[in-house]
Length: 105
Image 1: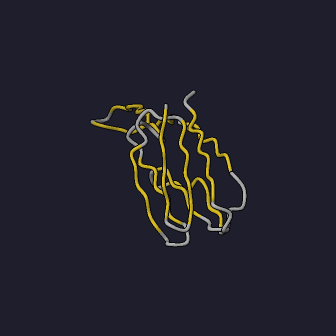
Image 2 (image 1 turned 90 degrees about the horizontal axis):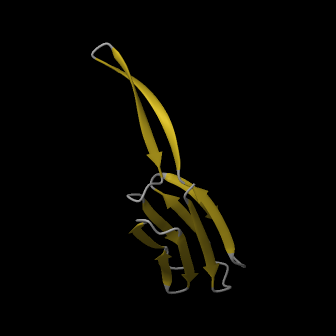
C-alpha cells in the first residue's frame, strides 16, 4: 500500500498550519512546537453506478499521484500548493518567513 510520510516541522515560534490532500484536511494545528509525523494511506473505493440499465463498478482512487498537497499556515499565513506525484516523503517546514515543502520518493 502506498503511504505518504508527511513530516511537519516548525521554527519553535509556535506557528500552526493546515495540511490538505486534495479537499481532505489531514492535519490541523494552531501551534507546532515539535516535529509532527503524519502517515496518510492512498486508498481505493468501489462506486456502483447504473448506465444504460447496467450496473458498473468504478474504482475511485483517493490521494493519487495527481493529488495536490496544500499547506496553509505560518506566521505570514502563506499558502503552498504542489502536486504530490509519486513522492511518498514530504517534509513541510513552517517558519516566520512562510511555508516550504520538499517532496522525495
